[in-house]
Image (cartoon, rainbow, N blue to C red; front, side, top):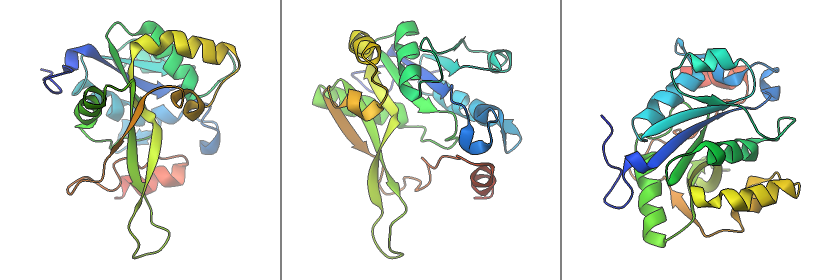
Length: 216
C-alpha cells in the first residue's frame, strides 16, 4: 500500500520513472540496469524503491525491452533517436505520465533514499517550484574536510506541465539537463541530514564500482 508523501502532494499524484536508456559505455557497453546487484538486477532495486514512493512506476529503456517488461511495469523507449541521454528519458516520461508529477531516478543508483519522493515533494510545494532536484554529498577533497554538496540532476521531481517546454528545448537540439532546468523555477533539496546515508546517491558507472557498492 502506497502512503501519502505529505499533505500537499500525495504519492498517487507522482509517477516514478526509472532511467535505463543509456548505452552503458563506461561499463563496456552492457545494459547497466540488468547487471546483478546482490543477486537482483540493478534496475529492479530501483523499481522496488520507486514503487514504495509513487503511485505508478515506468521504465525508460532502449534495448532488452522484454527483460525490463518482466519487472511488471510499463517500458517505453526514447522518442528521440540515437541515445540522446537522460533528457530524452525525461521527455519520454513526461509524454507518458498521467499524473501531475514525474519523479526521475537512474538505474545505477540502487540505494537511493526511501524518503526521496516525500522530501522533493515537500520542497517543490513549499517553494512553489517547477522542479525539485537532489543535492547530495560527494567525497570531500581532503580527508577531514566537510563533504561537498553537488546537484544530482537525474534525481528530479518535475511538474508534468513542463512537457511543452522540454519538447521545444529538445527540438532545438538541447540535450543537457542543467541547461533545461535552468530555464525553470528549480529548488535544490539537500540530502545531508543526520542519519542520511552518505552513499545513498552513489552510482555504479563501471563493473568495479558496482562490485565495490555490493561490498559496502
